[in-house]
Amino acid sequence: MDWFKKKIKGVDTNASKNTLATSLVEERTKSNIILNSIESGVVVIDDHNSIQLVNPAAARLLGWAAEEAIGLDYRTVIHIVDDKNKEYPDHMNPFKIVLEKHESHRDNAAVLASKTGTQIPINITVTPLFDASQHLNGVVGIFSDVTEQRREERQRAEFISTASHEMRTPVAAIEGYLALAMNDKVAKIDVKARDYLEKAHSSTQHLGQLFQDLLTSAKAEDGRLSNHPSVVEFGSYLQQLSEDLKFGAEKKGLLVEYITNAGDAGHPNAAGTKVVTPLYYVYADPDRMREVITNLFDNAVKYTDTGKITIGLTGNESIVQFYIHDTGPGIPPNDIPHLFQKFYRVDTSATRTIGGTGLGLFICRKIVELFNGRIWVESEVNKGSTFYINLPRLSTQKASELQKAAASQSVSAMPTPTATI
Ligand code: ADP
Image (cartoon, rainbow, N blue to C red; front, side, top):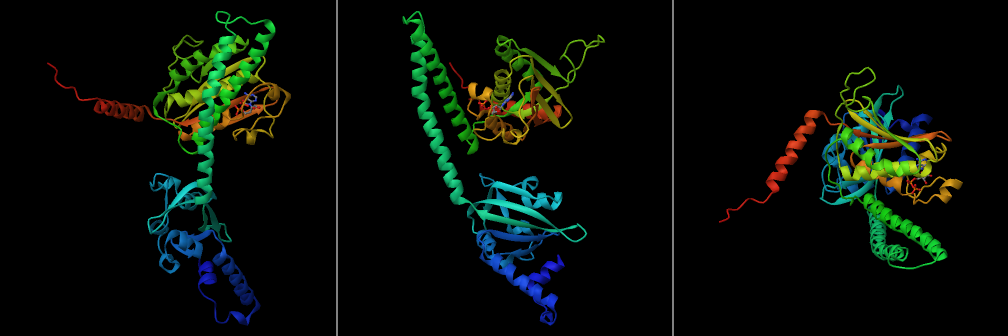
């Protein structure tokens, strides 16, 4: 970082004597003008964690004078916290990540805790700096105050969730009355009227689903999605869920298969030996995960005309992986990068006739990310699609520790028995 200190801190008195020095001075002046005038905070940290540069915007946001901060360890000056004011652990700290991994990192959900105690929502990007021989000699962090932007986002999300919540009630009433009108036991209608009412009923159901999805996605976006994680053994959980889901698919004439990497769970394999199914423990909310799997399974059924849907489970010592494979129309490669965004639907004649909101996969991604997981799709047009989910795997020991801790908590939460006469 010596080159940097020389450029920033002082100008060699002989500099003007040669053109190289002159151009360096000009360059420095230009960069200083930019650094001093931009609204984004810029800090440079060397490979020994020491702060080398703080521009005026960074000084203002951090609450530190540049002269005070320069030379200090960045961890003394820059405190990044989450939305609950809890300091980021090392593995989430953008500076630490880039100093270790030597790759750029961006965080759009961070909050800066300034020296004066104010909390400022920021977007931050940290980029590595390399010397001529490609050795990391520091990092540059650029961050900006996004208080206004986050406030607007919150307001928007609140409006969507209030509106969709309010609109669900009358829609449910309309749906109920339409169902009554179509019920032979309570109403007499002719064939034509029944046809119209059936159409109205199906559109109302779609509207109800849209409001429900809007509500869930608004909550997912501002972190209000309720979430009660517990230890879940995915082998038995997924097998049971596959049993529950398969009727919908079979009604459409599709086969449903559940497979684990240990073969048919608990049953003798082809050689006649009993296969021991590994225990795949994860820490997640089983109800939320059911929403995700049901959504992926329903999509597989919805978009597949003939063939088979396979629900699979596998994993290694650190990951539990499950997938839902279908023999449907597949997804064009250009659409895949956008698939998990809000309201994205592949524009084909099939999707135009098949109902949907384009929110399902967005909600799935948000839920999977709540449990530090990853969701993605691999697909081939006219062959089918496979949606994968990876979740961090718990060791059997960690799973039983967490189960014991949860059991003791629920015991202590129980009311103390009182003596009765
Ligand atoms: P939708 O309510 O439209 O199904 P999703 O967010 O669940 O919304 O899915 C987004 C889009 O991804 C769908 O509109 C569809 O085009 C495509 N898609 C999702 N699952 C599949 C699948 N199994 N096979 C083919 N296309 C799919």
